[in-house]
Image (cartoon, rainbow, N blue to C red; front, side, top):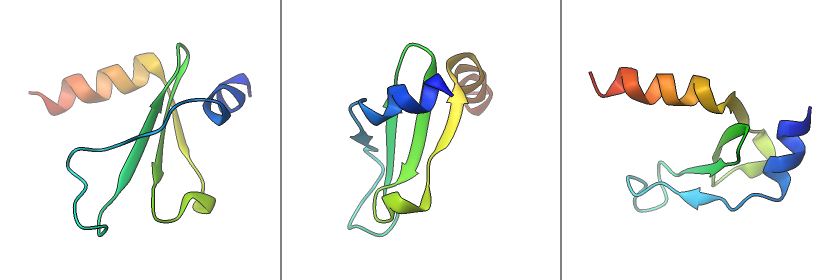
Length: 63
């Protein structure tokens, strides 16, 4: 999957809602994919979404 390869080189950003190291989420965005992972346990894996799917998810949250 090319998206996973892209995420390997992507810049990961910690959520502004993450606080005190308890609930920390990182997000990486590439032209084709969005990755989400637990910053405390990066080895646990990454949830990967197509950018369109991620955008639809965010739009739904705004409703």
